[in-house]
Length: 208
Image (cartoon, rainbow, N blue to C red; front, top):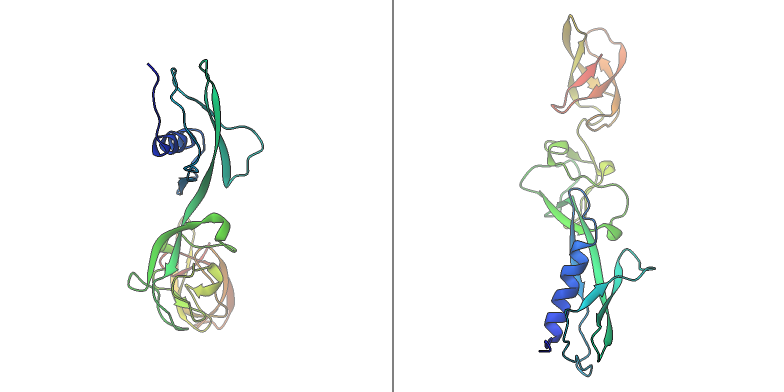
């Protein structure tokens, strides 16, 4: 007995097929949206299970799923399916003025289409908590590494010099802006010397 298919069933089959045949990015997600089927198109019953495949030469954002019935009264339908790859980014959930501290109250993690992202964005909230905005941040816009500083020029910092056998801690002043993992020049308040270290995840400057 032939099986009848509604437009919504065809769309659901196409969506499931695409989900099984694309790679989801690490830390991201994929939103799959089949196009609507023209109501004037007659979807005839099929005596055997429908065949689905994705022909070559499709872009990464849109695919045409070929849906075919291969019984004695065969038919073919091509259904466009939009594939949106979304990645996690931190955004300002309100307007943030220059110099304000960034924390859980004014930033949040959301997902955006990777093709809409311009430049590098931050997705690890631990990299940004306690940092200062270097300029006014617009609500809803992704936060880039250039828009904040974990250690800002003129900040008082702890300078830690350490090796496998000793550790010395003193105070200094940052001579430039830097974020976690970046190198920074600092002036030792005690000796007056300028040294170069790396900003750690606890906002200290480490000299190895």
